[in-house]
Length: 106
Image (cartoon, rainbow, N blue to C red; front, side, top):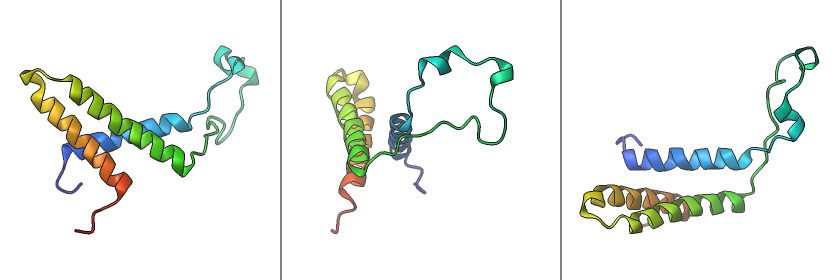
């Protein structure tokens, strides 16, 4: 990251967002309708929502899906005008695979 690798930063930010979204618990219908002001909870932490805890397997699946999505889009970008974008997506997928597989011992 110190080298300011834009592809790595982009891939990691998007993957962290996907993980954050996966942890979100869907709101029920009553929450969507809203509560009258006088019935609203008050105090520290009242706006915090419960988060789902992801297993390691679920996290790995999400990261693999993010990498696969990048490779799929890169494969669809066949026009010469999109060559730079396709290369960047392949680089981002490689970054994600590197985190899944761990650093090589070479």
